[in-house]
Length: 219
Image 1 (cartoon, rainbow, N blue to C red):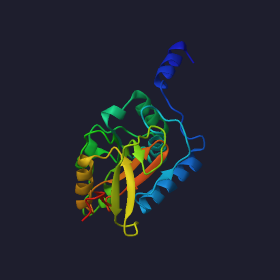
Image 2 (image 1 turned 30 degrees about the horizontal axis):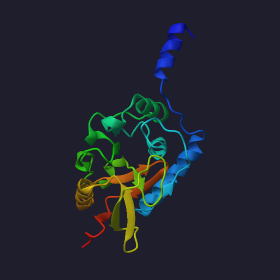
Image 3 (image 1 turned 180 degrees about the horizontal axis):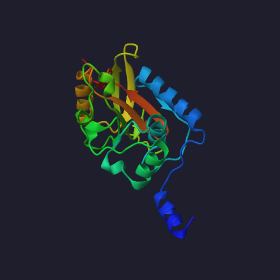
Image 4 (image 1 turned 90 degrees about the vertical axis):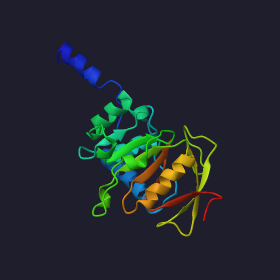
């Protein structure tokens, strides 16, 4: 390899974070955890600890490694679109980076951002499964503490498929604005988006079928 080629390669690989060591096995493990979380909304599932390109959590990165490929364009909230994140996901997943939120199959956002869930692909009444999946980085989940997880949390009551009567969860990062977004998303069913919340190496799913209200505001 020439000196010029070596330089170009070094620049192209700069900031890359490692992917799965055993891609097939680890991707299947993560996929099963995501499915379990979707089947039982509001339950916390832990993934194996692992590195992630800043500023992503380990859980968000592993979910991307497991679910993204050449046919699933990703939209990134600007605060998450670091060179390390973009380069690592392009290299390991082969996914394209969508410039429009409504053109993405997956999206990565933070709970403290102002992204409207309605800005993402909502699917249609004929094909609701074509909607986007939105990964939301939060500061805390349930009563557990993980890396980068905070202590002040909103306590929610969840109802819907996969939940026997009610389930209570604690989420650090969901304010009144987020509660309205969740209500609007639920009201859009069968359209709408499915959410995967991540913090540290933990994840929780809030599909569009789930109704969420703050403690004390249940009807």
